[in-house]
Image 1 (cartoon, one colour):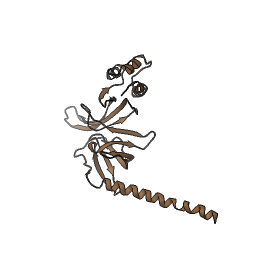
Image 2 (cartoon, helix red, strand yellow):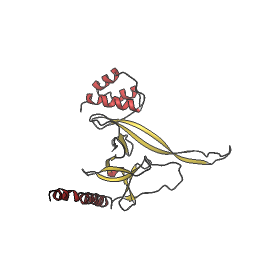
Image 3 (spheres, helix red, strand yellow):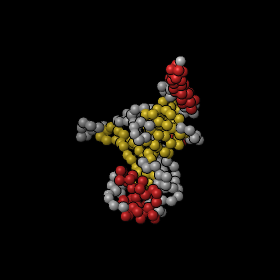
Image 4 (tube, one colour):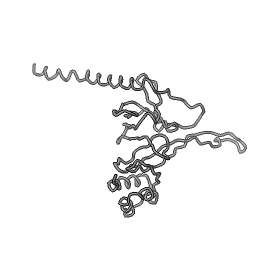
Amino acid sequence: MKQLTLLLPLLGLPLLATAQTDDQTRQMTNIFNSGFSPVVRSGFEVQGSPLLLAAWTPAALLLTGSTKPVAAPVKYDLVRQELRVRRPTGDSVAVTAAQVQEFTLAAGSPARRFVRLAGPGAPAGFAEALTPGPHLQLLKYYEKVVETAAASGSGYASTATTSAYADHTKYYLKGPDGKLAEVRPKRASLQEALAAYPAALAALKARKGSLGNEAELRDAVAALDPLVAK
C-alpha cells in the first residue's frame, strides 16, 4: 500500500507535462493568431538564402508591450529584418522588428540574444548582444544584400547576370545612455567610441595585446564595462 501511495503522484507526471505543452500551444496560437501577416516570398530568383539559420530554431520572443516571453520556432530573415514564426497549425507569419523588443535563439550553447536597434543612425532590425553589459554592450548587426555579378560561364560579350545574397556585418558599441557608435575590430576605433568615458579609455590604452578580430574586441569591451559609470 505504501508503494502504491508513492507511485500515484508519479503516474500523474505525464499528464501534467501534456497539459503544460497544451497550454504553451494555446498561448502561442492566441498570440500569433491575429495582427501578423503571412510570410511574403521573393518575386525574383536570388542565389543563396536570406536567413540567418536555415532550420526552424526554438526561440523566446519578447513582443513589444509585453513583459513575458513567448516560445516559438523562428527563422530570422536578414534581408527584411523580420522573424518568421511557425504557428502550431504548421504555417508561418512574419513578425516585424517593430513588433519585437528582443528574442533569444535557444539552440546551441550559449543561447544567442538579439535586441532591437534604436536611435539616430541605427539600422532597422536586430543585433546580437556579444557582451551582456550592463554599461557597455557590443552588438553585432547581420545583413544580407543582393549583389549582381556576371553569370558564370557566360561569354565575353554576354550581358547575362546572376543575383546572390552577400553577407555583411557591422559592430556597434551601446553606451549606458543608449547611444550607438559603430566600431571596428581596431584599437583606434574603440578608443574613439570610448572618448566620453575617461577611465575606460585610459584602461584601453594601457591594455596589452592586439585588438584585431571579433573575439579580441568582445573581450576588451567586457573587461572595460565595469569602468563605465551610468
